[in-house]
Length: 373
Ligand code: SF4
Image 1 (tube, rainbow, N blue to C red):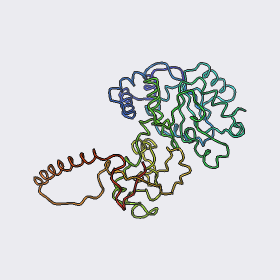
Image 2: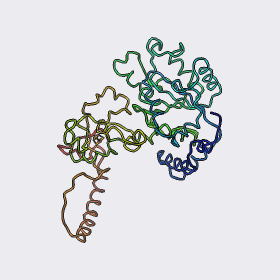
Image 3: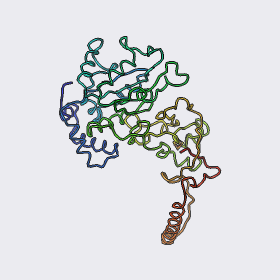
Image 4: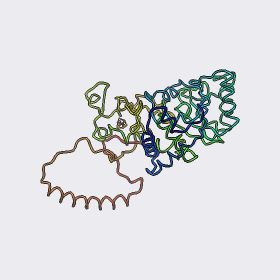
C-alpha cells in the first residue's frame, strides 16, 4: 500500500469520520487517558507518513497472527493497522523468498520501524532448532531489532517463552526481553494476546512517540494493571462462597465462581473482563471456563485445573454481594439510621485503618478463601 491518509483509507472502507473520532475516543479510554487526548490521537493517526512494521515469527503456533486476522468485519482498529506499513510478515505477505527478504533488508537499513515478534527463540545448540532461510531465530531477531524504534513481543511465547519454554524446555527457549537489551521492549502476553491491546499500544506509540508505562514484566499498565479476579463478573459468587464443584453441576449452570475448578483469575493481571475476545463477544470465564493465567510468566507450569493457592483475603469492594438479607423498614427510618450508622462506622473505620500497619490488616474469615498478594 502506498502512503495514504486515514481519511482516504476510511473512505475506501466505507467508514465515516465520526467512526474514526469515536475510535480515537475509545483508544483514549483504553489507554486510561483523559478524553481530551482523543484529538491528539486523531492528529497523530492522520499524519501522512506510515510507520513501517516488521513482524517476525519464531517458535509458535501462529495463533497470534490468527488473532490479528480474526476480526470479522473491517473496523477502525484494522484501519490503524492498515496505516502502518507492514513490510514483512511471513504468514500474510504476498511476496516470498528473496523478494521478501530484500523488502525486510531495505526496511531494516532505513530504520524507524516497529518490530513485532511472535514466538519464542531457542538458544540450545546455537539456535538450530528454529531456522528460517538457513538462519537461526537468534540471528534474525538480533538483525531485526538492531535498527528498530521499539520491539513489541505479542503472545506468551514471545513475551515469556510460552509452551516451548515449559519444562523441560528442550530447546532452551526464551522470550524477546531475555535477548534484546538495547531497545525499548514491551510485552503483550496472552494465549493469544488481545489485538485491542496491540492497537492501543501502537496508537500510544504513534501519538506520543514512546511506549506506554509498563510494569516490571514490561506489560503495559493500561492492559495489565488490574487483577482479573477484581473485575470478574463472577466475583460476587466468590465472595458469597458460591463455587462450581463439577463441570455441568447446578452452580456451573447458574454462572457461579470457577475458583475451585482451577481458575487463575486471583493471580493473573489482564484486561480480559473489559475488552474480551472475538470482537468483544466473550472471554474464557464468561464462557464457563476458568482463567488459565496466560498473562503470567509460568502459567504452563501451574496446571489449568489445579486450584491456585491464596494467601490473603481481598475485601469484596468491587461488586455488590450476591445475597443480602432483606429487611423491611420504613424509608425515613432507614435514611436516618443509615446516616448515623454511616458516620459512626466511617469514623471508626478511618481511625482503625489509619492505626493499622500493612501487616495488621484483618485476617480472612475462617471459612473464606484467602488470597495471594
Ligand atoms: S476465581 Fe475466577 S471465576 Fe471466580 S471470581 Fe475470581 S476470576 Fe472470577
